Image (cartoon, rainbow, N blue to C red):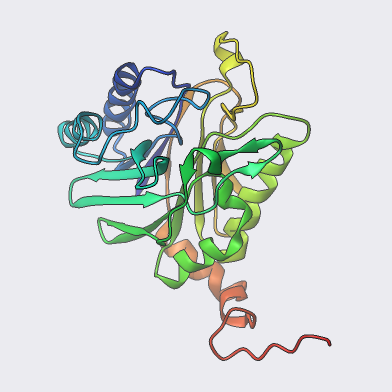
Length: 274
């Protein structure tokens, strides 16, 4: 399966961001990709007030995304914000396209490094996978990458890859953490990981102030053995690469971490010291 990773910089205007997404979806489809993954906050960049722009899944933003996917004949996965019941929003991935219509609400919220996502965002509760041309793919978002159990849950559900849109926060050591965590999650669960970040706004000459995580770029496609197969720098770009489904079984035959694990299994017996 050919998969596309679209690293771009979105702004505060959801309509303009859809124009960017449409162009990227067409490029990916023209290159033969079956799936194009856009970053977290593709609807509107962090640092934008989220509650006023959040829309339901049957609203105009989501419906235009569906139309873009249908016109290009490709599955599009993009981050948006939907209203939550308590006045906050949910950080939602919408996956839509031929034979696919699913959503994932970010489970692990970014309450770290001086930023409190939970102030404005309500957490999700569901582990979500989608099937594209008979290939199962898990959905995760940004800060989820620090929690290996979600990626193993994707593997347990039959996924051979996790799609990971992100808008990674900048700061000392953050790029190194991003690269280490993405590679580790691929190896933890022996799945492909398509990690797609917002491009660094500075790489496009955009000044950003405040603590909002607006992206550092460095998207990558990592194999189930933890090796980086394709990657980008800080600036906007598009990767179109082969996702070898059969390689997952070959790697799992050699690196049997899923079969050998004990903690988290139903038959595990855990004794804690008194």
